[in-house]
Length: 153
Image (cartoon, rainbow, N blue to C red; front, side, top):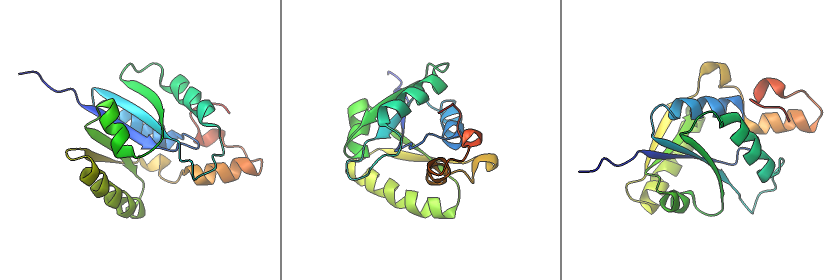
């Protein structure tokens, strides 16, 4: 009997990809055989950082880890998980508000893609205050965001 590879997908807009995201990715890559960072392209939202630029930044940041791949997708997360053969979704939780939101999404994704399990990792406390929204605001008004990002803009 062949052992099924544990493939996880870490979906998000990653606008931008922060040190908090990288913490979840690095820890998740120790749990799963393959981890796909899936950058969602939500056509209803206007991105701040171009999606192709963010893909390149994430690839450069994670290039030393052969278990990590970076993909761009459109549509439902559960459908893309099927497409890439992911049987797990990886999500990071900073606080109880994140849990409430992510719990609902996990249930819907499991309904849409039976057997797709969501695994939650608690964000390392040193990164728990970082959010992409705050980083965008700081950047938009000329502030230095280097402390929050694992790469140079």
